[in-house]
Structures are given as structure tokens and as C-alpha cells.
Length: 307
Image (cartoon, rainbow, N blue to C red; front, top):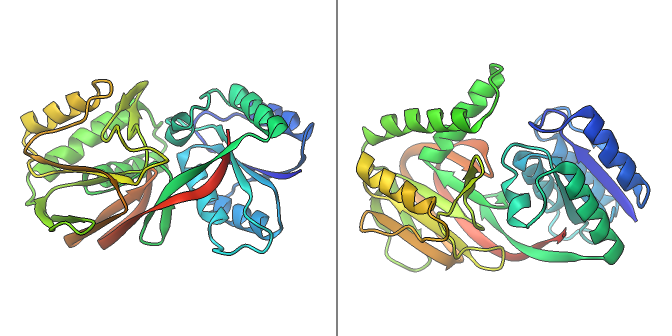
């Protein structure tokens, strides 16, 4: 079996020693090539080249951003000549939402052991993915509040700040205060339903949980999985009491956020989002800049993952 290990050396919880352990363990059972990413988008380029060369397995070792780039690289060619490689994941970021949604261990060494077992037993599964215009996403995407948070945390990271749950929480609070003073600018149309106007946010989920607040899962659409369509959650009112009530619901086990100030749907194939002026878009925690119109589409059984 030919495999490529795509390593992001800048990922939050990866170390040189840990990367060597992972690579040596994998090299004992597969014909392994290791590629360390050097710039944004490099992981996607490596994955696309691996798919074109007929590699059997591409392993993403990094955070959710690295996984997203690899997935987009693997799916770049709609009809690959040699068939599409299987995706393997060894978490190395801070949240690792996609890996945890698959039930993989957060510890890289334990995750490598699980991957070796999957290789030995040929264990894998197909997962559905989402698309936001021309970009694939594995677990979530969003317009508005969450995208603002992602963009501003990226800026802080670029200035040397450590990415921690506390940093995300402070940034989310700052972005909330700015957004709460703005008029709602988002319209959401779910499938063939009538469009809903006057919305402040559009959170689109491909699985559950939406993300993690430290070790606490945030469940925005608990009945959304890799085997269903997309889920969407939008807020009409950014009043502090309303927002805190919904956040409390999201942190309360498997409760489904509900109330007259929210739009929530699950297992849908298409979501059209239009903004009165360009707003930020994020996918899998990656800032894609500003967009006025976004077409979210669910794609069943899009990719095979070793588990």
C-alpha cells in the first residue's frame, strides 16, 4: 500500500518527536512518503498530486484546517484516473472536530494505533460532506458571527498569540457586541421552502457536534450526521438573553436548540444564503473572506475514511 503523510508542523499540538513516532510507525506497514506543509494550500496540493499518482491512502496530520485542505485536494478531480485515495486522520490541532466526530482518539499516538488497525483490517467508511460554493467542508461552515471569530483569531494567531479556548471565547464576545448593533443582513432559503429574511447568522452543520468549547461539545444540530443531509441554525434576534439561552441549550447534552427566535432545520440537501452586503464565510474553521451569496449543498458518500 502506498501512503502519503501530510504533516502541518505549525499545528497546535504537533511536535517534531511526535511526528517522527507517527511516521516510523506507519512506515513499518505501508510504503510511506512524508510531506511537511510550508504554506497555506500546500496540503491540498500534496493531496491532489497523490490522488493523480494513484496513492492508496493520504493521511492528514494536523488540525481541522489541514484536514480540510487535504479533503479539497482529494476531491479536486471529479473523475480521478486511478480512483480516489482513502483519507486517514491523525489529529494534531486544538479542536480536531472532524476526527472526534468520527470517534477517533484525540491523542496522535493513539490515533496512529487506530489507523494501523484500520489498515490491517481494511476498515473504512464513507462519509457525506458539504460544499459551500466551490469549497468542500467536513463538519461545519458559517456566515456572520462564527466567520468573524475565525477571521479575527487568525489575525491574532498571525501576531503570535496562542490559540486557546479562552482566546476564542473572548473573540466571540467582542464579535457578538459588534454584531448585536448591526441590522440583520442574511436571508436563508432551505430547499424549496420560502426564504426567511431578517437573520443575523447562518450556521451550517455537516455533523454533530458543531465544535468544542474546550472539552465541552456544542450541539447546534444533534440530528445531523455524516449519513444525513446538512443542518442549519440561524438567529433572528441577537439580544443577550436570547443568545445565552441558545448557547446553554447547545451545551446541554443532546438537547436540540429551539425557540421562536431561531430557524433550525436538519437533513436538508440545499441551503441558499444571501447577504445584503458581503459577509465573512468560514468552512471547518478556515476563513474564506467575504461572500454575498453562498450555495450550501450536501453530498452523500463523498469520501472514504479509514476508521
